[in-house]
Image (cartoon, rainbow, N blue to C red; front, side):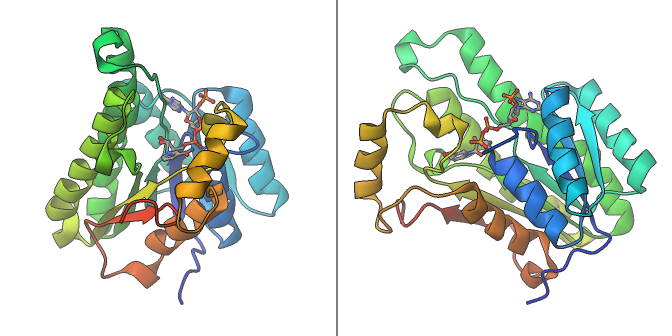
Length: 251
Ligand code: NAP
C-alpha cells in the first residue's frame, strides 16, 4: 500500500499530550512515514515535547500554541504553518475534551466548553485549512470523533452531541470539497488507553474490556494506523465515511 507521506505537511490539533495521547501517536506515526508535522496545542511545553520527539526521529516539526476554539488562534497557527512549511496537505482535528455530568445537572459552561473545543474547533480549523487545500486541489481531512457520537452515552450529552456533530460536519464537508480533490473522513475510537480513560477505576476498565469482542481496550497506536491510511493515497477513493476503531464494540 502507498502509505508514504514524504514532503506532506500535517496539521494536528491536540497533539501535544506528551506520553499517551492519540494526537501524539498520530504525529509520530505520520512523521515516521515522512510527513512534516505542525502540532497545535494549548500547552507550550506539551507541544514542544512532541515536536522534539518528532525531531529526534529525524523528522521536521513545528510546535504551535493556541486554542482551536478561538478562530483568531487557529488563523494564526495555520499562517505560522504556511510560513514554515508552505502548505498544509493533511488536517487532523483531534483536540477534544470531556466535562461529564448527567444532562439535568450539566452546566451551560460545561456544555459550551465541550462544543466549543470539539465541534467549533474542528469547524475553525477546517474552514482555515480548506481554503489552502482548495487552491492545491488536494487534501485529506480526518476528524477524530468517538463511538459516543454514534450511540450516545449517559453522562456525556455534551461530548456525544459534539462527536455526533463532528460526523455530520465530516459528511457535509466531504460533499462540499470532494470536487476539489479533498477527502474528508472521521475516525470513531472506542475505549482507548489515554489520560482521558486513565481517570476510570481499573474495575470499570476491565468491565468494559469484557464487553468488547476483541477483549481489550485500544491503544493510541491502533487509532494512528487508521489515520495514517486515511491520510495516505491508499484511501484516495474513500470520503465521507466514519471508521470505528473500537475492537468491535459498536457494530
Ligand atoms: P487527551 O490526551 O486529553 O488529548 C487531547 C489533547 O487536546 C490534549 O493535548 C489537550 O490539551 C488538547 N486540547 C484540549 N483542548 C484544546 C483546545 N481548545 N485547543 C487545542 N488543544 C486542546 O485526549 P485523547 O484521549 O488523546 O483524545 C484525543 C481525541 O480522541 C479527542 O478528540 C477525544 O475526544 C477522542 N477520543 C478519545 C477516546 C479515548 O478513549 N481516549 C475515545 C474516543 C475518542 P491539554 O493537555 O491541555 O488538555
